[in-house]
Image (cartoon, one colour):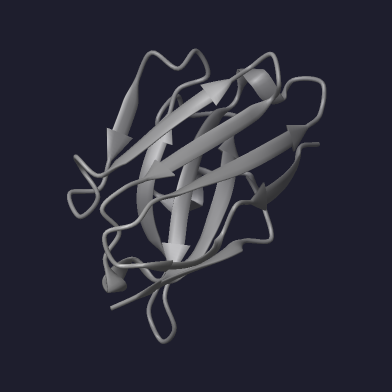
Length: 124
């Protein structure tokens, strides 16, 4: 079992930055592929970024490429999402997820564990 807790969300003006954190608990959490997803009101959950267990492989949605950076610190069992140049369309609840079977996964169905989410609101 892996428990995930997100933090770092909030209200920011367009062009600003936020860093989200996802703290994972569980003995093997550092061996999981990790991802960030988001869901805006009235929209489906969408993939944002993913990182392999070693941190050596990352993948981003086109909409955030060049603005967001995913990283992890396995010693702290924590995954981060640095978000720069934020836009109003980035407003959503952001979820952290862990996959025990796939190194870098885009599909939500490939993730086994999910956090409760943290709200990010970008004002124009």
